[in-house]
Image 1 (cartoon, rainbow, N blue to C red):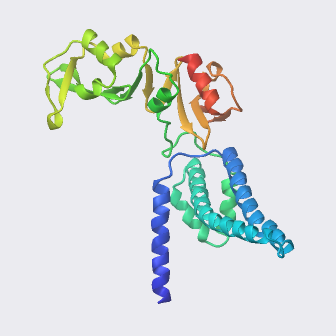
Image 2 (spheres, rainbow, N blue to C red; image 1 turned 90 degrees about the horizontal axis):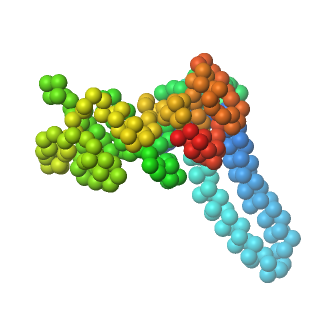
Image 3 (cartoon, rainbow, N blue to C red; image 1 turned 135 degrees about the vertical axis):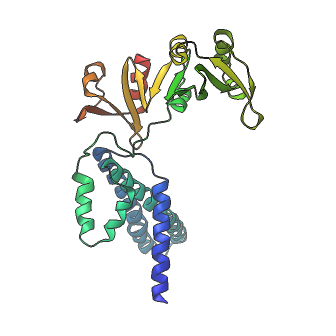
Length: 306
């Protein structure tokens, strides 16, 4: 019976671990990890210290007064909240460890090794002391540039144009590459194009249409002839801000923007450092430089260069 219980417990733990790893994306720098870890552990410990010791002191000293009843109710309520909060804390702290593992170019599954005696002590020092060895790795994810620009009203008289191989996106609307015996054209969904009236008006007035026909699942698609380089034409005419392989080009400098647990990190080629304002301490590694920015600083960088 105990053996079955152990098997079930391990299976549940592996399942929960897989779910946490699957829901955790990106990475966190060492310095940011320190700050968030101290805040989380300090806040969690303070909450339980107040709930257990401080309230117990008041309960003991006011046990013969009417105040005792309400203190007891408050302590019970705080215990319930604390138990629920403990699960949330464990989940968020688990995610924090995985983000730090990603920063060290390791899979989140390495967190399972913390159950090995003595290795967990070694891992504690590694997580808190070791610096990242690579500036960009497979765990990196950019911010959602389109949503970020749209929410912060940065797309006035501009379009975000994203390269995707031979296809490209303009403000999230896909222009799909087609080549018929050397006759190159781009297809776009009429419905999606109608969601951006400015882009629709520009395309219908300035791009040469070819024969249009229903596309996938009966969706009507509009085709535009590629007269030379349609991507470059849209970029120039619409004052496009180009995103290529996760790098966004501002003021002719490509840089990668990723979240760093409530802040942002920008990564760019060290050779371009003289053209990027220093908002914080610059970390250099291999051919890349990196800065940690607040949202206000990131907006300043973009608005000054875009």
